[in-house]
Length: 474
Image 1 (cartoon, helix red, strand yellow):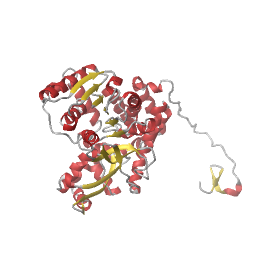
Image 2 (cartoon, one colour):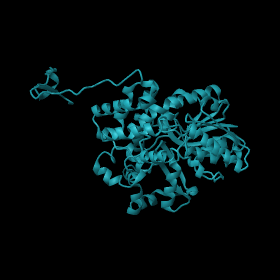
Image 3 (cartoon, helix red, strand yellow):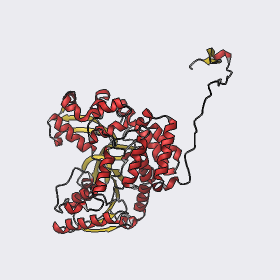
């Protein structure tokens, strides 16, 4: 089989996934096509994978190319982990909104950072899907790790018939936390999790037929447990269910935790991904600077390690062998969650076998959970349409509807901030070159101005205000 890896210059995901694939017996003997537009990183990864293959005596082959179409040609699987604009664009995603009071911890999923990452990345994902339809093997699967996951997969579901699944590790890592709290082995927890990426809900937690939620919730009321995940636990206290993302992530997707200095001090005071401002950008910038002139892979052992918790190889193994596996995946919502919009991206249980991907129908989410998901889906829908059409007004409207941004910015400030982001990130946004945001200058109101009087039907009037009639319902 042939496995194409697009964005293979990644020193974290590419290395982890390649180790997982080489450690999977059903995938040994594959040809790995590594593709990235950045030659130095690409060649370093090619050399390292070559060492892994040689030192472990494996029958696999590897080659690198900057030609995406060449990598995808005749591929059985395409794994996508691109970040258009890299750390340079990410800096604008974080720093420009911060000047308007939009304080992001991660900035890659929702909000101004997530929207602009989607505007940069979705056209590339569309091109990858087009290449697959034309030159990959019939029925080839696209496995997407590119963020913002929900927006990227939402777009793929609109523009392509290529079978795809979006993969994240939020469910696995959250299960580690839950298992550690309640003292039950992770593999023994019976759970149902569904919602949207980075906002999926554990609808069921059980062990040996017993509901784990009462015990888990009681522990979360204790300070030593609460302090680890203040935002997630606070949301569970008020909405009833635990969610898949950390305090740093989740604090950005809702309006209650980062909209004021008071809220930040109370709920986002833990360092790094516990809520710290710019935590993810700071980490990425530090790693990029550290390895700018040094090959980080020279310090890595080429010996195979046990497979990680990433879902990728379990999907490939199940598809190649027919032995079914269940996991969580991001897919087009074709009736899987019935109180979220058709066609959006949802994260639900998915079974995989030789016949492909089989998402599980969950039905309705609890209404309060669906409502929180919908607040994010609305932003996603506008951002996807903006990325596909090149309409900057839709991008501004997506950011205006973002729960955190709308908690701290006026509409005029949102428009000004969006314009600044477009100006800074223009090199990575070719679909917007022929359009720009409409100016909406501030309207000054002189002190002596008098409101225009608008006559109304006296029969509807119940009083007067500012010299005009007031009707019922006003």
